[in-house]
View 1 (cartoon, rainbow, N blue to C red):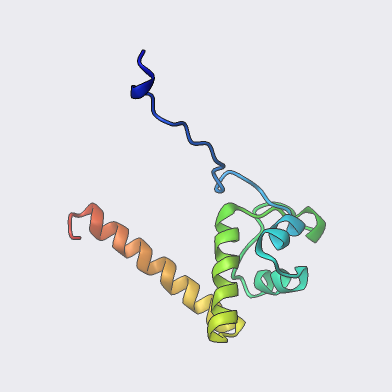
View 2 (cartoon, rainbow, N blue to C red):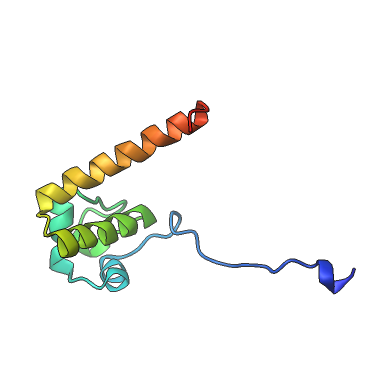
Length: 106
């Protein structure tokens, strides 16, 4: 086979399948554990596993939500209740856009 026809292989990690500990989530987002715990208490994110804090495991979706929450708080000064509302509305909007796209209404 001619090397001119080879395509590069890209590797990466699918974050939806990864489970992150509280420490890993904090490190990945550059935040303190207390802040992430506040997000859990406000139901902005939910541990996917573990009843006790030291056993908590978070999904890749939680990583995305924590980073979004951080931007809302840092850039716009939104409080935790506002962050919860904003992220839920953004998620609902994305779901509606997906449904419209499936129905053929771009």
